[in-house]
Image (cartoon, rainbow, N blue to C red):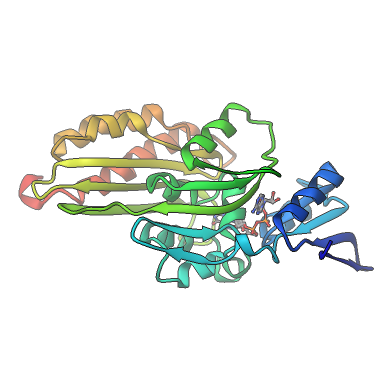
Length: 297
Ligand SMILES: Cc1cc2nc3c(=O)[nH]c(=O)nc-3n(C[C@H](O)[C@H](O)[C@H](O)COP(=O)(O)OP(=O)(O)OC[C@H]3O[C@@H](n4cnc5c(N)ncnc54)[C@H](O)[C@@H]3O)c2cc1C
C-alpha cells in the first residue's frame, strides 16, 4: 500500500495517511471501532478534549484522497469534495450562495480554515445541513465497493430513524443542483439564531429556496430548519401549502402553525423544543414576509 503511517511519542496514536479511498475503507474495516476517519479534526478534537469520546488508537486521515478535494461546477450542478474546508467553500466563486451563507455562520475563521464541509455534515447537526436540504443537495458515498448517491433529506431521515446507528460509509462529495429559472426568479434565505451574535451553537437555523414567477406565485419551494440539538429537516407540510400559491400575508399566517407543528428542534440546557419550534416558524415567516411587495402587505 502507498499509505503512510505516522507516530508521535507525545500523542500515542497511530495516524494513517491512505492515498486511495479503497485503502481508507480497508483500514476502517481492519481496525473497526479502534479507528476513526479524520478530516479537519475540529469536532473530533473537541469531543476528545471534553471527554465526550475517547480518541481511538488509529486515526485515518482523509487529507490525501483526491476524490474528496476540489470544487467543480457546470450548468447543472456544483460538486464539492467532502474534505474541502469551510474557508475554501467561502472563498470559491463556484460555491452556491446559500451554502456560502451557511459557511459564513459556522464557527470562527480559525476553525473554518481546518473544518470541512464533510465533517460538518457527518456531525448530523452542522449548520450547513439546512442549506443543503433547501438546495436539495445530494451526497455521494463510498461503501467499499460502490459509489452511492442519495439526497441529504433521505440520509437525514435514515439517521433519524436509526438514531444510534453510526454511518459506516465514507462521504466523498456533495452535489448541489442549480435551478434552471428560465422565467421568474430564484431566491434563497438562510438565518442562524444563536445565544449571542456569532461563533456559537445554533438555537435554530433555517434555510429556504424558492422559485417564483413575476406575479409572486410560488412555483416551487424548499424549506428546512435544524438546531444544535436536533438533525435538520425539510418542512414539507409548509412547502405543500405554499407551492402554487401567490405569496401573501394571509398565506404566511396559515404557514406559521404548520412549521411549528412539523419542526422538531430538540431540547438542551439552553432552549426547549417549544421555543425552537416557535423561533423557526417566526424566522421563516419573516423571511417570506420580506419577499411580499409592500403594496400587498
Ligand atoms: C470552537 C468551535 C466552534 C464551532 N462552531 C460550529 C458552528 O457554529 N456550527 C457548526 O455546524 N459546527 C461548529 N463546530 C463544529 C465543527 O468545527 C464543524 O462542524 C466542522 O465543519 C467539522 O469538520 P471537521 O472536518 O473538523 O470534522 P472532523 O472533526 O474531522 O470530523 C467530524 C466527524 O465526521 C467524520 N467524518 C469527517 N469527514 C468524513 C468523511 N468524509 N466521511 C465520513 N466521515 C467523516 C469523522 O469521523 C467525525 O466523526 C465548531 C467547533 C468548534 C471547535
